[in-house]
Image (cartoon, rainbow, N blue to C red):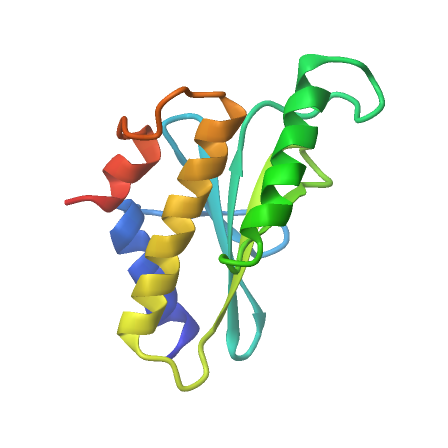
Length: 149
């Protein structure tokens, strides 16, 4: 599968009509003024998709609510990393939480890319809701509205 075909799948699932580009050649779109989705090609046969969410982490050493939430998320990530291909981290430019997934495009079907992106959407949604400390995950979040037709 070609990179442009994979980007088209992401665009359709998130209902993104037009992507913006940054100085690094990454395509990005902001959903609901809160969650930023980025895609870029890391190698000829790999696409990277990232979801950035939450307020910037002010300081990892300061005793504040951001640090407490961040520590909680890292502990939860350690448990979830066994089941999911996403990596939770902090974006070095914005200090916002980011989850990243690498999707192989070599010998990959449209269905496999679609499944990977749908799983990614659910994972970003989980982390965004966990960061906001929602009590119930049963309520449909703003992110999932983009993926459901």
